[in-house]
Length: 416
Image (cartoon, rainbow, N blue to C red; front, side, top):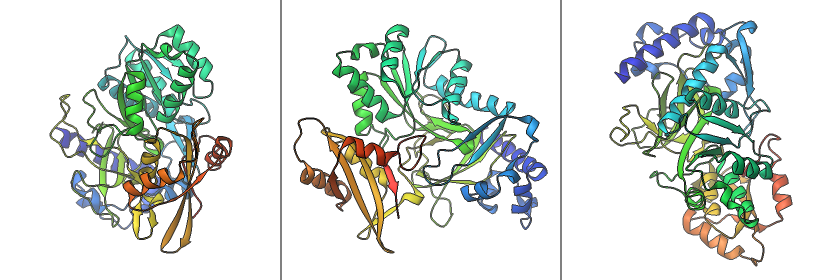
């Protein structure tokens, strides 16, 4: 049933693109489309890249401007921001995706949810969560990420049962509340929907920040991975064993460096094809993110669709340190596991064409003396290589984190 649904949606998307997308009409001009019978033949089509969207944005658009009701952009944290256009039906599809995600996470009309992510600045995520919560009938409290005091006040007044936010932000605001003796405002929160940063290890257990959030909030932790270009997210259900891939909305492949499919459970680049998108459908889009299809029997929740594991890195961010391959997220996981580290940022530069130099700038919590050697030892023990560690001020680290994008901070700055 899942396979038939995927086949039908894929062929529908392919036919739609060949009729309406100038990009795919050109992209496939030398491809024999008569041999494409379903998703099993998808590898016969060339990939679509972020550079393609950046260079030929107008050619991807399949509708006239009068049909466009929403324009969003990516953050541009790993390159130039991309512009994406959505029709009314695209927003309905987005709402369906989030409806399925929230429903599977056990959120319904009985819930009140604090949204602590940006809903302006042309981001799609905040809007997606808002319309998704409307779809399941939950009450939304759109406090955003800027004003912790407002968050505390609204939490006290509305008594939320769930929160949506970036893990490091949720971690920090809890500490601010606790320092004021006000952490009780979160006592009603039973679920945390975590976006933008991994909260799981490859074995699907909670990583360091996931464990901290679970302990501090005494709440269930749900990992979710979203992609603006695809207008979709992959959220865990109550069984917490990977993000569900809904075959009515998207098809996902995992490929190696040469573009060949890898078996379930093996890491590779996430490649996705959107289904039922009107404005700017994408076929075999290389996301640049590294993950894997969960190699387990069907989920305990009863859904038979496949699941996506946590993102372990970004292909363009892959580092080579003294012959050892390292993704920034591996370093981030170690730094987040050190309880006396207050803030940090990674800076990558090139030593030579064969080796990268990684500088970890970090600040320590009040009263903690120099722990540079201890931090180096922890990094070496986990990575087998030792990045440079420099103690710095919180203010300077914040400036570096904001140097890549004005819309959001980053823990990794690539200056290679």
